[in-house]
Figure 1: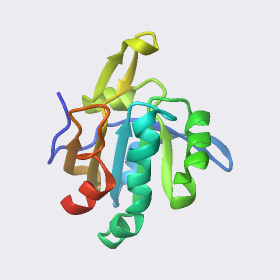
Figure 2: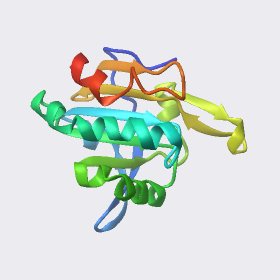
Figure 3: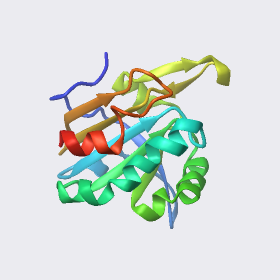
Length: 162
């Protein structure tokens, strides 16, 4: 079942690359008492993800902050080193976006947003989405219906919904 508005985010861990190394971080620690936008996408360095989805949130960081968002987190089923490098390459890290790895897709599966990407040897990937949660409770879910498009799940759409 896909996560919906009014539900609590699942108990999950995301991997972050920090100055101290790799941190296996509980989602609850990232969201407790905060207004957070989480956006997920099929893969780092892929077309729409790199040219549309991530840039849409970079462009809208100030508008999201003005709406009270404390943190914007990009999640992909990639390893933590790929997410770190992609964040640097796109400018997302410098823009203030937290690049998080969901290496085994456990978070993505708990959201009900995984799909079997046969083109990558049947490994799971994430549907394209964006959600807004306050203190771990989902307030907005924007799920893209076409994987090659970033309209519903982009930064502009999230600013409008909050």
